[in-house]
Every structure is written in structure tokens, then in C-alpha cells.
Length: 250
Image (tube, rainbow, N blue to C red; front, top):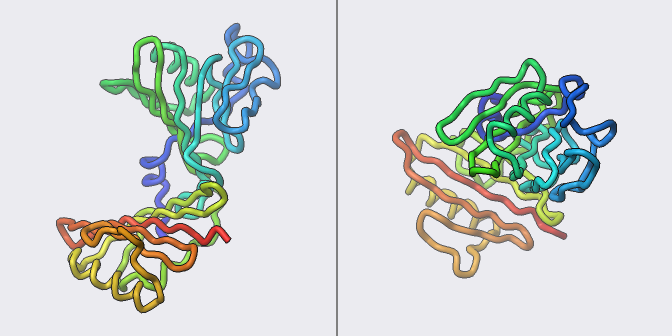
């Protein structure tokens, strides 16, 4: 399993929770409302300008009327706890950036971009960033990150994966109670060779092509309640495989 916090930051953006910088601000959420939990994708109503919040990691408070949602539960990146959230806030970009940077604390950085801004930093053991996109009187954002101090054991690669695979990304989450894992591997071998080896190995292990699955660059195989979908592409040197695994829901 590769362990690249820098790569993790590139794929994920998350928010941090800071109480101190908000003290004394007239527009700051009051008291325990800073820790308001909305059960995931709902904005929580509260006095002043409180809002939606992430449920189980460091988090910002968004302005009243904001809406946010995640991409899954129990998210893991390279064996580390992680999260990704999409949100929109009824506030212009400049005001929202100032609102968030005040919560993020002195170690955060704010970078201007052609269509928005990027806030990034480390807080409470998390490497996080928030990407903001300007939409006039409303701002859209992606907040995500990975926890750096805790790590689960790396899962073994599938036994039917051809030899020579180099893991580049491992991301998993619970989707309706089913563990879904997405991985990216690279090979020094060409795409046609890897594609043929995958098909032969899966068939030998008892897997069967899914009904209606394509036979080109994308394929899907099934074994009982498990599914394996993958795309094999040519790279300048070798090939790459995007693999999605669905565990048996039973």
C-alpha cells in the first residue's frame, strides 16, 4: 500500500474546526452551535448564522442556508480515515473565504484562483483543504482531507490481479451498507496484455463477465454478490487500471 499524504491532499479536500479565531466575532456561531451536527447532508437551523456541519471529523461551520452532502460513509484513503463533502453557501466568494479562513486558524493558507480560491492547512491531525468556486451571490465548494495519525492495515491486492501491479490510489467507502473500494494500479506491461491477464485470472478464480458488460477498455465481472469493474488504459510507459470492487452485501 502506498502512503502519500501529498497525493491524498490532491484528491481530497476537508475542513478544520477551530474555536479561538471566532471568539468575539459578531457573525460567529454561538456556543455549542459550533459543534452542530446535521446527520450528514442537511443544514441545521440555529440562532445567528449557524449551518450545516460534517459529522465525524474536524469541520467548519457554514453560513445559514448552506447545503452539503458527502460521497459515502466510513471513507478511507490509503488506509487512513478521510472524507469528501460538496457544499453550496448563499454568500459571495470573498465573504465566504473570509468566513472560513477565520475559523481555520493562523496555520491555514488562502490561495486565489482564476475561478475561486483554495484554503488549505493541517489541523487536529488532519491534512485538509477547501476548494471554492465563484457563482455570483452563491459559492460552491469541495471540502475534503485525510487523517494523518491513524491508519488501518493495508488490504491485500486481489489475488487475480496480474503480477507487477503498483498501487497508486486506494479509496473506499460504505455505500448503502456495502463496502466499495476504488483503486488505481499501473503496470509496465501494455494495456492489451494486462486486459487479457485480468480476464484469464478472473475466469480461473470463478468470476464471470456481467450480462451486457462491454469487452473493450471497460469490463465488469461478478462472483456471487461481489462485483469487479475495471478500465484498462494505455500510458506513455505501460498501462493503468482503474478498479472498483463491491463486496458481497450479504
